[in-house]
Amino acid sequence: MDQEFQTDVAIIGAGPAGLFAVFQCGMAGLKAHVIDSLDQIGGQCTALYPEKPIYDIPAEPSILAGELIEQLEAQASPFGPVYHLGQQVVKINGQEGAFTLTTSKNTLIAAKAIIIAGGAGAFGPNRPPLENIETYEGTSIFYAVRNRNGFSGKKIMIAGGGDSAVDWAISLADIAQQIYVVHRRDKFRASAASLEKLHELAATGKVEIITPAQLEKLDGENGILTSITIADLDGNTQSRDVDILLPFFGLATELGPIAEWGLVLDHHQIKTDQGTAQTSVTGIYAVGDMAIYPHKLRLILTGFAEAAQAAHHILTRRNPDKAQHFEYSTTKGIPSNS
Image (cartoon, rainbow, N blue to C red; front, side, top):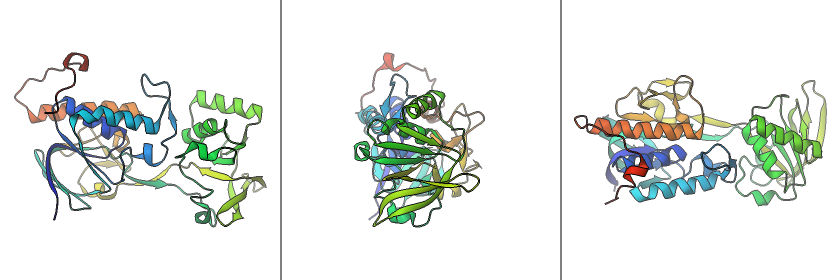
């Protein structure tokens, strides 16, 4: 039998922006149901890098991604959100005030408004084009660090030039036997402070930076790596003894069913109004990495702000004849969940 629910707001995606949207909706007196294709909340933070430190959350000089999700869950908890996990929204019918969402498990949710907070949509790692790479995945090759201590004493090659590659090189340097960082360019796409720390570690010999270079060949047996061959842009090769390979080449993303919902898109992202977070369809909002508008900063805190904008605009739309007076949380406190 299909399960049927009713709520004020259906939130698609249980990552940081989605969880904060629950809190903001709750502060506005709006009930929320949350749908996520993963079997746990947290989105990429729990699925890909729960032990990655995040440095740009206000009032938290450093917080692990998994801990951030725990805090956001606790913050949302007083408002009694209902989570529908391990299922994807496959169809949306209706209009503002009377949407019906159908999930892949035939769960039906009637909602007055919808907030899409699905990160970058359906996602998985971009795999480097290496022969027999599947043989080593899960034993010697990992696309996320879920248990940092499992890499203690290992010789680790990290491939990539973004924040994830640089941050993990720094984080694992104090427990690994050796870190190799391989990037196809000399220039990295990471923060200046992180790059300064990386080069400090390189000066001690704990980290070896190999650029410009790319992965060429894996060697090992029975799923266990023993060495990796790398090549420069001229085809010259060298190898390093390696126990673990961490390729950080970003995510392969697709919108999935969202692409069929009639929303105006821009390169696999949903166009929104910057002031309200509303999409081209009245009553449907998008926040976080899924949302795009001119000059947007792709930061978690930007998604938080968008979640607040969406919740307040939904409240205004639900009560168009009532004057809305913004109050700070320090003044109004946390509303009762009764």
